[in-house]
Image 1 (tube, rainbow, N blue to C red):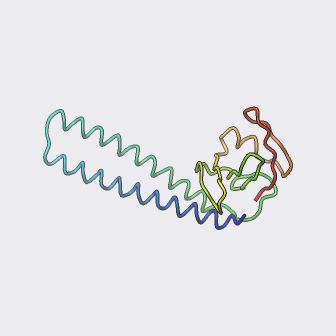
Image 2: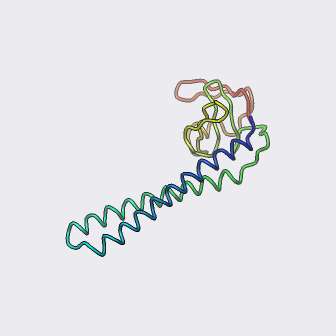
Image 3: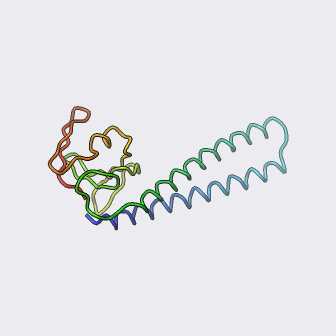
Length: 147
């Protein structure tokens, strides 16, 4: 597994999400500015509040994507000897990217699940080595390889 290529692909995907979110925010702000010129009354206040809430959600999503991109940029592509931040862990139940909560992704035809260090599975896997096993949700996970 080429972690450098994986991180580059993830970074590109996140950059696309960031661009989309920035465009959505700009469009929403433009729409809010235009509404303020032509509307008045209770309907205007309700619409403005809803737009403000949507702007808050988009801003939160943008901040999270920027945080993830920064987190990926700071990862080493070196092979890990134990499960740590940025490690890619092959288990008998699937492939996991540790410490980067990106959810489901695909790389080289394989599904990868990005989980945070705070996630219960992430905590159980942390500091484990190849051939170690853990029990999670009544399932046995055996670490087959660490990248």
